[in-house]
Length: 151
Image 1 (cartoon, rainbow, N blue to C red):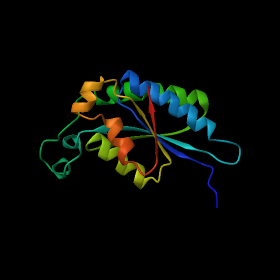
Image 2: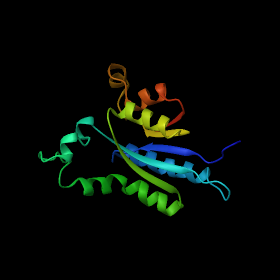
Image 3: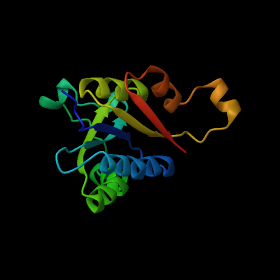
Image 4: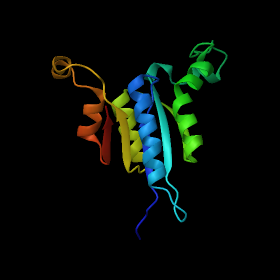
């Protein structure tokens, strides 16, 4: 059966490029939603693996924290996508995942069976991209679904 509902991921990091990607992802999610079907937008922050909760966090050992201001940082990072999704009436799920950014996004997209990954361009120059490929390039080359790079 044809499934018209879409699952769309947008990578968020608080940068101007990710804010543009978030706005575009909301627009795409709204465009793929209708009366009989509803698309979902996943706004995803990827943190380094060393910030992942550890087994020691459940014991008496001192807890590793993301800092006292983590809730405020998270609110600021999600602000643009929250506001745009609310105004557009889009179904939004916010996620924080851990690992290398490209690998974590690809794994999340595969696990959630997503149809599209929206990601901001790095903004690096041509020489920098040649020396060290960007996250958006890595995602585009390795994704099992479509990838939309926003400039």
